[in-house]
Length: 69
Image 1 (tube, rainbow, N blue to C red):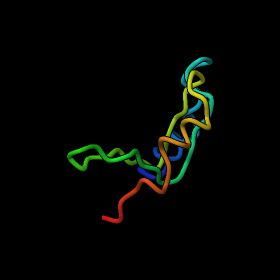
Image 2 (image 1 turned 120 degrees about the vertical axis):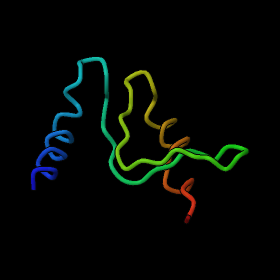
Image 3 (image 1 turned 90 degrees about the vertical axis):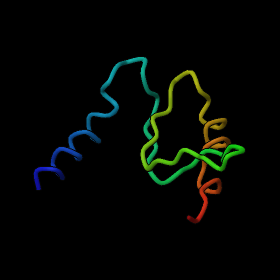
Image 4 (image 1 turned 90 degrees about the horizontal axis):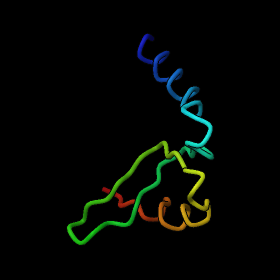
């Protein structure tokens, strides 16, 4: 229960890091395109910067890039 409480607090305060830090927080599994070696980044929580257009983020990092393994 203690770990669950800590994780919940971290999620709730994720957008409080600074005024210019994040535009939004996206939830759900998303992945980057795999490189030549087959490595890719995947996460369930993505913090989108104000400097990055949300459409370009969704184009580069999305669910369809995730491999099944």
